[in-house]
Image 1 (cartoon, rainbow, N blue to C red):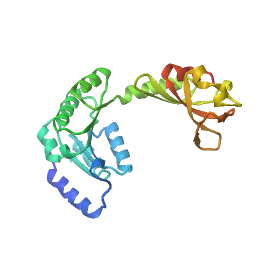
Image 2 (cartoon, one colour):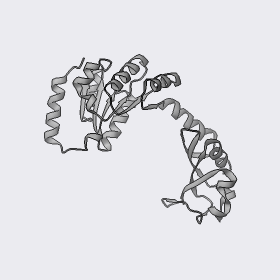
Image 3 (cartoon, helix red, strand yellow):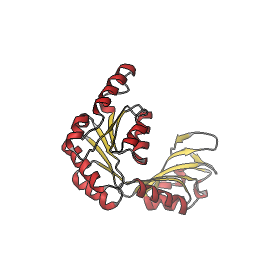
Image 4 (cartoon, rainbow, N blue to C red):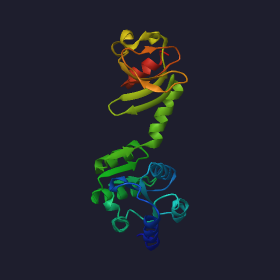
Length: 240
């Protein structure tokens, strides 16, 4: 059940009176679990102007972040009634950021789905955990440790400056322009036909990124933003 609920409501009234509205109803999010992942996420959402309700079973964590979030509460969200008392069913977005307690993660996600929260995100600590959450109907499942491990592996073993992989084996890569495409327009180097990738952005030393076109002449030292199938962008980056 919810603890400190009266004080939470009191803080809500005080902050509504003292602080101008940050955003509409579609900019409210409940973050359940205020560990490293949840607290970092909640802080970034606050920085972006969202109203954030942070919830955790650990009173010390709630106290730690109570002044930096719009609202904070001590509650066990495996109890559907606790979620209802906090009004989470009225939010358009919620994030289950619970760490290693898989059972709690599943129960909380089930409660939020039952409450018909339109946009539900949940952290998974393994592929199996993620599959269970997906089968439940969670709209977005994230594996932060796994995804970061894959990303760093690409950066360590390759010549990429940054790497982001999406669904369907599709990736976005930042890499230094290989010699085979320099000193000529992109249209002439035929990057897409020869290497199966598309150059979408280019950055020259001391300048900002700009969109790339077929007439863009690539120079030595330029940094390119390249998209395409993962194996294709990996191979292209290795040319540099």
